[in-house]
Image (cartoon, rainbow, N blue to C red; front, side):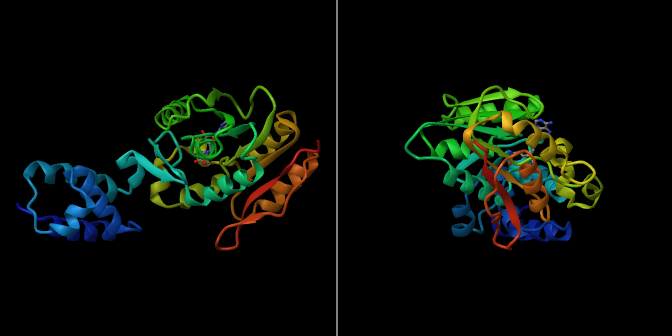
Length: 280
Ligand SMILES: C[S@@+](CC[C@H](N)C(=O)[O-])C[C@H]1O[C@@H](n2cnc3c(N)ncnc32)[C@H](O)[C@@H]1O
């Protein structure tokens, strides 16, 4: 069967739409680009170009995966986040746009003209730590994760971004050696009982990256317990939180003697980042 770029794009868009995919047109185009080895410009400027049998077969393999609701980032093996492009695989959470608010907060808390030590607890792909280090040339950082597979992805991302000289990685359970000027975390915060009702794409992501326990707050309890011993005098902290969790997390931080700034809110007005400083 023959197909042109535009006929394949249309057919694939309809197939993904029927499968319940959120952004069928964009995903269909990206799968054609990756499978057939063509560019977006080719599709737009040469829509009636015929595809070979080999190209069609390659697109079909990717399309079948996406129609089964495997996330496009895992299929393509990459995800753009803040100012960096990251390799991702199913051992790491796919970095989310809302996490960019945590990066923004971190950059406000970090000096641009002095060295600083940054800690990222639950580093995953390295999204937060590596974005921050890319923006703060004098900073160094440590990324911690309980998953050795996730750490391997973060290590590779640090190297491909040329940040491996300033980033170290360590396998631990919400712990690190040393004292840090800024402690960051986007820990798992979904209530265990809510996970089953989430979009099918989340089934492909590691449970360790999503499950925050019965009330979604288990990781914050553990991290805040350890945090006072990890911050330098007047060190700062910033955490991403799930919807409705900010006040509870700020109260836990206060109970550990940490101060809190006003919550940072996303474009929908949801409090997304709890941040503050150590008691000094
Ligand atoms: C929500 S993901 C965040 C990943 C990445 N920082 C991001 O924002 O895209 C949480 C991360 O915490 C890690 N994690 C879960 N439990 C942990 C623990 N007890 N100690 C250290 N890391 C843990 C997971 O493996 C996962 O990489």
